[in-house]
Length: 498
Image (cartoon, rainbow, N blue to C red; front, side, top):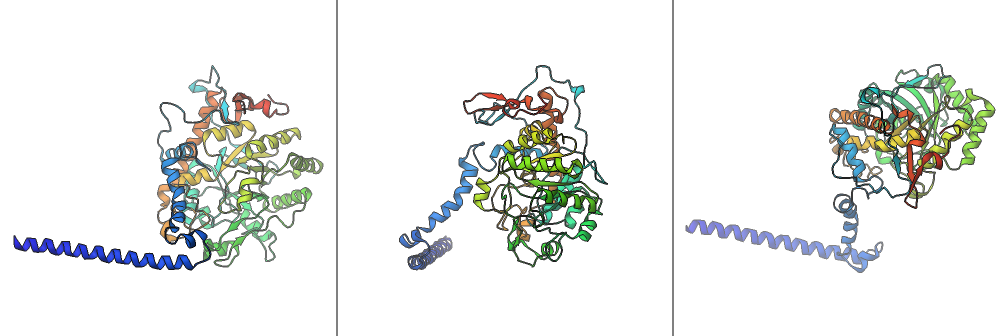
């Protein structure tokens, strides 16, 4: 009994001494921090309120976390809310996306699309799948694109190796294309055997000569790969129109540097435009040159700034002839995303896709180029309603980047530009990359694409058409500021169409 008492006393004595030691260390640390804070001159709060002023920064950093998980409602977050992300997550897991009780969406927000249900929709045996659609009918090797929903441009460099691998394998399984982004094509893009769209950015990574211009030999070599189906010349990106790509130096590894022609650790800053292209005639000549060298369809990715500018583009096409037209135009909205961009460009420059897409579709039809130029919609389109709206507005295809990032496991941590992405998607730190297991994520990519296509078909059937590409503007109503909705074909009347 006495031995037990002594042991207990020793334990209590040890714990007491430990507590005193820890308390003493905390006091010493507080004194050191007090001296540092009082004498530094960079932060007024810490200088005026030593030690406790540090909690402001801590709480500011944690605020983003608490808002996302505890305080924000399902439809409140930006850039993507919880409801959008969870739909993608369930689709990627192959789980049911049915919900109960009622919608949490506020249907009074101006611009909200409401699809017009048909009283006599097609029966189950009258449904149809969207047929593959031809792109580049005048190219030596046209592309018969299987799916209307595909993966938008995300470069190896902005994305990690396992992320690109998972996208490649998932795209192959789903039968969709994968855009390489402006960083050139890597072995990991080819790995899954999917169709690839090679994006040529202003820096021309992967196909550039020593002076930064286009190298026809490299271009021809890239085009010789059967997996490379099309080429996309990036004129502008929604998140940063007028600004080239930005790849922070900490993300430029030896492998990425070799593919892009950079030094390890060097910032990959692309020019703000193509030096060879000063006007629309130069653009058409540039596209024609690439089409001649590669033999494959060539299009552009751009952001609409004004109707007049796009009209001038189509007038140039009409003057030069339909054979000089781009094979496709990817319309990126000003709300589009990226790994790194200046806030003013991200927030304030470029027309949103919901205004730009109908505008360009109308111009294409006005100039009688509907079957010559395919329209691809991009910019914050991740859920079935977004894609159904885009097809009704005039798009032939829709591409998404962030939707597929969510399918890979993105939690919207907003760390894409810092090489500290906690899910391993946009980082080259092996510590974080190990969390992204390709064999587990590739099927999620495929299931997300397949589930989305299926639910767009459900919307199409509900409005009375047999398949999604038969959706028209008359099938959608847009909520107005007064709370009433009006048909989209009245808001955006389409030439020669109802």
